[in-house]
Image (cartoon, rainbow, N blue to C red; front, side, top):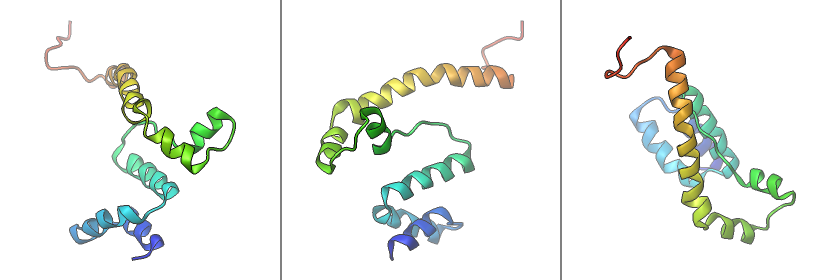
Length: 112
């Protein structure tokens, strides 16, 4: 399986056999393809979320990172776990606002 085939399988599977191939293809796709895959999955399933990638970090830094710097950065606790925790913490109010906007209530909430 070549890299182009891997991305094609990941983005176009319809059955169990293709899903197995898609999972196997994950180790072969490039970072930019992984981002495209994430965007397609978000669109298909209505997911929300924010992805920060190397380009975002470089834009913040206002310079390119070396590969060594990128690996060092990726291995920090702040990046691996801390950022996710902070995004999740601030995401719940948005979930609540969307539920309110849609008129969806918790079973324990009364209409009064």
